[in-house]
Amino acid sequence: MENERKLEEFQQKIDANIKIEPKDWMPEKYRQTLIRQISQHAHSEIIGMQPEGNWLTRAPSLRAKKILMAKIQDEAGHGLYLYCAAETLGVKREQFLQWLHEGKAKYSSVFNYPTLTWADMGAVGWLVDGAAIVNQVSLQGTSYGPYSRAMVKICMEESFHQRQGFEIMVQLAKGTEEQKQMAQDALNRWWWPSIMMFGPHDSESAHSNQSLKWKIKRESNDELRQRYIDKTIEQGHHLGLTFPDPNLKFNEETKNYDYSPIDWDEFWNVVKGNGPGNKLRINHHIKAHEDGKWVREAAKAYSNKINLSKKTA
Amino acid sequence: MSSDDQGILWEVFIQVKAGRPYKHVGSLHAYDKEMAMKSARDLYTRRNEGNGIWIVKAEDIVSSEASDGESFFDPSNDKVYRHPTFYKIPDGDKAYLMKNELIDYCLRLGDSSLILSHRIAEYCSKAPILEEDLAITNVGLDLLGQAENFLNYAAKLKGDTTADLLTFKRREGDFRCLHLVQTPNTDFAFILARQFLMDCYHQVLFNKLLNSKDETILGISKKAIKEVNYHLDRSNDWIKRLGLGTKESNKRIQNAINDLWMYTDELFTDNSTDIAIDKNNFGPLSSSLKNDWSDIVVNYFKDFRNRSS
Ligand SMILES: [Fe+2]
Ligand SMILES: [Fe+2]
Ligand SMILES: [Fe+2]
Image: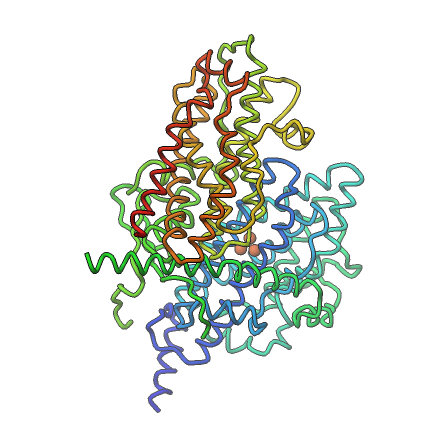
């Protein structure tokens, strides 16, 4: 009875677009959904540093190197903002990392694909960050205060990420024949994975309805995916490149681009970690975490000593 | 629950301009307040958004049921990719007689910063805690900027080349960097010790270069000294943490210092370039840096040895 009344009040707040703050009452399922979604988002930012970090030492100019370094650093910052937002729900960062290492927490499967050439730095920035931005812009309006505030900061910083990727694509697409081929090859490999970043179709998505009702998400997977496709196709044509989808066509009626059915078998295979990339990414993260253990212990021990000497002084 | 400890949670408040209110911008993890303050600077003022920072332990905030020195904020001013501003090389009269020595000197300084920043780039996504990944990347970006400035100047003096060509098309044997910066990222202690030794060196060097008669070197050094002061502050904090932390960390950092020590002689060895540079008042003799450097290094070590006993 009591709970029902609270639930009703809660929904009224949501409907009135009042943000929910950490200490406010919230349904347990709301909390659990946020914990899962925000931490998954945080893990994606952190694991996403690896495919780009792969090219940091081989960036072809000083300028490109600086930009890429700053971009990957931003992603670390995004992960950090998001872990902190998730922590307000009562789970500590240590726990999130443990879940990631144990395979209990997911991250965006797009980061399991390898980055084979420098053109992939272009395609990742343009397509992967481009898709992420569409999702993140929408999430600025999420009902949970700390998550929403993190998204506002992230969106501000993301604007240069997609641009740096697109700039690389422009350079290659307008370059020599070989460079153009590199750009096309990267687009071919990253197009479908970027489309899959929006998750399963609305009809298949288990949590979607409740999340929309609670305004954890503001728009459905398919709506966001369509927005991303429409905006990206135009940019691709500007580059003079083609998309690996023979059925891509502007639909005069809906004013959207139609596209081929998505290969969900591949999607689920990658999500479940059945690829070599998944092991590589997680092992890299576990190794860094374990290599750093003695440093964290030292920092902790040092702060204990400092506090102790202050108390006895 | 895992036994790992990611440090204390801190809340960060930033004042954008003097006189404005401090606004909450987010949180971070750190083990002590020095680390919290520096991480806040590295994380929340990367785009030069700050004039002042407050940090407070999250647990100390009671919630209802429903300024530092120039080196702290200045460096993010010029992250070109974020707010593009490039350092302009003034066309002063050049001492053409010693152009080759000047080129050699700029390559030496530029190459050392370049390779050190390259080592830091290799470490990306491998730091012990996320906050440190961000912070160390800021150091790497500063160094890369310094490298670019010196290599641009060298390219301009040489003519017919660019900083990029010097970076990517020179033969390995033509690089002028110190051997210290080439040492591998063996572990966090080595990375830190290498950084600390170089930060001390850079601080002494750039302070001397503030008297350079060469306008360009002077300009680069004015900017670099602010960055380097901050780098040293940071690496010194870590030297203390590791030196005083646990038995293991003490052993590791001591080993790293011992192993890297043999590379430090080179920092103070004069050659014909040094002599020409010094004679024209463009820069100091390398050998003249040794006393100041030793003072700084030894003092820091003494500092934490006293406190550990
Ligand atoms: Fe991001
Ligand atoms: Fe991004
Ligand atoms: Fe990203």
